[in-house]
Amino acid sequence: MQRDGVEYVVLGTAHVSRASVEAVHAIVRSEAFDAIAVELCEPRLRSIKDPDALRNLDLFQVIRQRKVGLVAANLALGAFQRRIAEQFGIEPGAEMKAAIDEAEARGLPLWLIDREVAITLRRAIRSVGFVERMGLMAGLAGSLFSREEVEESEIEKLKQGDMLGSMFGEFAKESPPLYEALIAERDRYMTAHLREQAAQAPVRRVLVVVGAGHMAGIERELVGQNEPPQALQQRLAESPPPSPWPKVIGIAVFAAIALAIAVLFTRGAGFGTDALLVWVLCTGIGAALGAFAGGGHPLSALAAFIVAPLKPFRPGVPSGAASAAVEVWFHRPRVADFDSLRDDVVHWTGWWKNRVSRTLLVFMFTNIGMMFGTWVAGFRIFGKLI
Image (tube, rainbow, N blue to C red; front, side, top):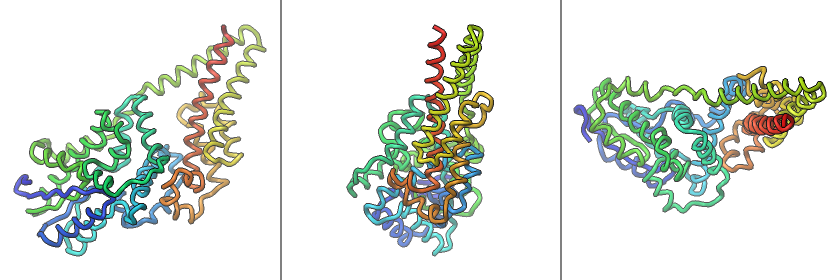
């Protein structure tokens, strides 16, 4: 494939395939290239070259910056890859590691052309409505709860797709916004990155190692893409603003419940006090049960119980932040937890055994419990008005 005087040889691979590893070695050793481009970003390169990088994960910062969902999603993605790969004794991304090794051995420039997974997931989540968003979360969860072994012949079929697309299954294929964020946007982003790199370096022939699901898209973009590459990458790397509706709905629900309680107080102190008690118990118990469901310490559940009813007075702070912070304090992760994190989360039970992943679960389940408790409280309080 020729573009601007540069020949791009696009090699499609499966991310957990021995055949793909051998194909990378074979083509590099038999043909001449001026650079090698891989479907990786800086964080993924670091994780491949330094498997112990998770030791540097600061859980307090993750909680404070509200990145729990993204960290959990990245762990789920890695678990999906490892669950398949462990059946055949090959590390996920081994073909990318082979390309990296070949580039280093030959002194060739290594181009990291993919968009960061965190940005891709964020754009995917914000591109769909509530129902599709729940389907996306179900895809993440389903990849962990599935215990079926996959035949190696089926692994080769991944060459017709993409790891992220495969993880979310048919749901991603049937949702145009998800397909756009998970696949099509990355085709454009990687092509733009190739064009930008080629313009900055005197190269004539470049090997591009990507998941085979991206081959057709990249080849199509190499022919028809005309937008300036830097501007295109910048646009595709932007995080779309979150929808205001969840916040608006949340504020409206809290305001309606507060108004209902105020009306009940006008009917008598006893009515208003009972309504307040319903609010405290429903939200507090819901959040506490969520913390317990995540495997939290009893004091983590107590923190959830105390903080949850105060949610209307701290709209920007999720209830799970308090329970997760207490969980980290009482069940401080050990070095061994970080070392075994990638292996533990391969199977769903390991999420509750490892102190790092369990903290993430405490955060998420506390928030889910709080949401459930809010709706229960609302229905019961409005029922008292009738």
